[in-house]
Structure formats: C-alpha cells, structure tokens
Length: 112
Length: 110
Image (tube, rainbow over all chains, first blue to last red):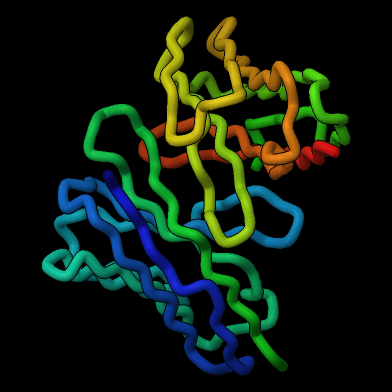
C-alpha cells in the first residue's frame, strides 16, 4: 500500500534555511501536500504541488518534487522561531476517495 | 481551522466505557474523515465518508464506528474504549483538494 516517510526531527538556527524531506510510494498521486501543526492545534495546509510540476515557490516556501525518485522537499528560507512546529508531508491516494496518506511528521526546532 | 468543529476537546474514559466524538462542518463539503494522531506515527485514517449516507473503513477502523447522519455531521463512536485508543483524534472535511481540520479531541483511556 501507499507509504510516506519523513525524518522525525530537524533543528536549525534562526535565519538559516530549513529543508524537510519526504519520500512517498504511490507514483500515481495527483497532489502532494505540506501541512503544519502548531502545538495543541489542528493541521493547516501550507502548500501543495501538482504531480506534473517540479517546483513551486510561495514567499519563503519552496517545494521541490522529484517524481522519478518519489522525493518531495520543503525549504523554508530565513527560518523564524514562529516556524517551530511539526510538518507533515501527505500524498493523495490514487483512488478518487479524497483520502490523504500522511507521513510521521518532522518536528522543526528553531533556535534563536 | 474555521469551518470544522469537534467536541469534546478533552475526555478521560475508563477501559470499557463508551463515548462519541462529534464533528460538524459548515462548509457544505461532501467528504469527511476521522484521523488519529499518535507520536511518531503521523495521522492514520480511521474512517471516512465520501458523501451523506456512505461510510468506509480507513487504515485503522477496529474498535470504532462512525455515523454520517447528514451532510454536516460525522460522528466517531468508541463502543468499549481500550487504552490503545488513547490518542488525539482529528476530524477533517475536504473541498477543492484541500483538507480542513478541526482542532482535535484529546482522548485518554485509563
């Protein structure tokens, strides 16, 4: 079945760039997503990329998709302490159910 | 997270007790989902409902039942709670490719 893998933890200094990586298994996924979860809150969509795109940029966020290697990354430029959160990668399931398959989440710690 | 409301936000149960988590959305979306979140395991789909009156099992349905009484509401029931069901539960509704999540219900089973 589908699977999404992420590293569990990343620590960076304020002002540095953060790169969170994700691998997925379903090559027929239409969309790939990045969600952000702040402590005690639900998940909020940060950005998504359509499977026929290689890159998407949105202000400080850059998403890179390598479809051949089934690798997705999220780069946060000029990381701030407010970016500290858990980041989830997700892929849309191949069937038309609208289900998303989530990775385990990467905890980003930003040190001042 | 406006648009998807979950209740209760916190609940403590004893093993064997039953309870229902309520979820309502005011965005007129067809698809609704229940996920559970556990440390190091991300979100796992329990049940989903593609439209009013239909429900389907997700990845981890055992020990749960759901009910989609109308388009707006999708409830999750634990008939006989077990400590393994201690988790944070999230309801979500889908529109235009995006999932909108509620704020979560933290359930502890003793």
